[in-house]
Length: 561
Ligand code: FAD
Image (cartoon, rainbow, N blue to C red; front, side, top):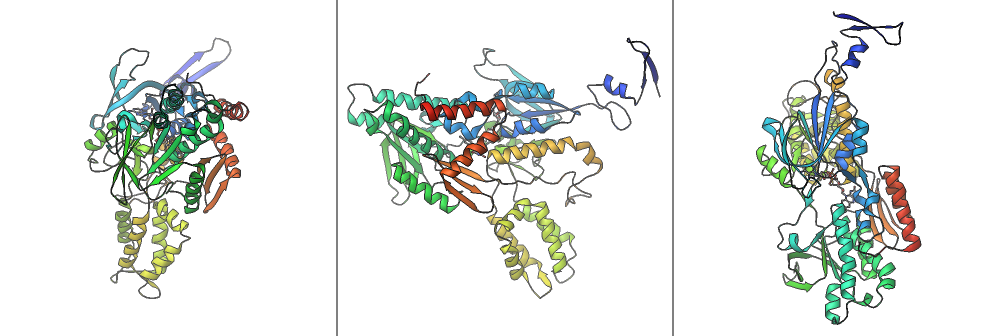
């Protein structure tokens, strides 16, 4: 091996440079060494997006073998749970954003402010465009190579192609959206206060319509109602009587993903507050002046004048992802599919996290069939109880969702499955068991599109990347069904810590693990403390807490700057 002796400037000491010496590692700072002391070329990891999943991935990634390049049109992380509070000035937009450059510098990564407009998976390239209207004046287009691509671009609001929505409605997804809504709400009050308007005109201008009874639509309606009660009454006393909030929901209930007790409480509270809640109303079109809905019960189309519409009916895939799905044979799907290790199906070296993708549940049954095939079924098509328990354990380990489902139902289903599948005392009929399991499968839901899921996925993937070399040598995942050996890592497991639904008037509904439901003022304080603690830095935490304090003391700021 090569030996090199260097004398140091400080005199006296010598440093010895051999193929495997620490000095060699220092001199090859850009390329760490493999087990034989040879420099290894760093893999280029391109991360698309700086939201919940992308930021969490970058925050936890600590592997010097990767050369990390982040591409996002947004040079900050946005704390979306407090976005509805920005719409009426409870919290300032700047208080809930964290510049990404700080993290990039700390970690030694690179960042480019641009959006990816095309993914070319066969050539491992992405095509990017610098942000429109940036200080660069005009846009610049460029290509970027990758060895590994991490897609964390989130999703876009879903309009279900309803005519007029893109043109006339406001969305609540980005910081700019919240600011636009804030300006527009104030603008409506200023317009309604102009002289020479008829009563009808004032009523129209001050009719706020919220479409979508999910958590965001409900929280926005509640925030708007608080603003009207706490502040508008003092600031615009002459027009206050003309204000109306209508919440439209196509389903039977609002907050239908929450416990029934929360749904019922929220509906009653909104009625008491005078929010006009219309369930079973599907919006079929929006014009500059009117919003039209189809009533499910009667089939009648009803049109109403409005001053402002906020659209919050869920999310859909971004165009760049739709195009990518076409390329990799996922064109028929609604959402990009990954396996439980967050690898995009049908594509090499590409991972997808957060709202962009969903773990493909359809494979569950195929894999369960494979587990049975591997188990010794004998000629009778039955398993004894011990083998059966082993199979169930295998399924639960592999599919955390199955386990969650079984746990949520207090394992009643296992008992039910056993009962329905029992051929004899000690034997389990496999076909019957599979049938029963497919019932469980059909009831299993995709993971929700939430910040909780996105940030846990980012953390999970970063931890996998951190242990990549170690686990390549010593895999720690379950046995492979297709192919030999074990998977490198355990599959992604989601831990649900509970959900909140702020309902206004300092009341919040909280659904916590273990079917624990709490509604009221105490949950509001829990909400304050959880969100204050979840903010990503002390800077944002301090800003948000001082915004809350300012609001308590002085009320909300109603200027439209
Ligand atoms: P995002 O956080 O949306 O990040 C996407 C990133 O990708 C952004 O940085 C974006 O600029 C970037 N990007 C977009 N297009 C491209 C492109 N072409 N190329 C490169 N980069 C791109 N969840 C909860 O758990 N609790 C809550 O209380 C809650 N409240 C919410 C309130 C509101 C108003 C909203 C809108 C959402 C809320 N959510 C909540 C949901 C949560 O915000 C999302 O589930 C979460 O943001 C998803 O994270 P993500 O990383 O997939 O996407």
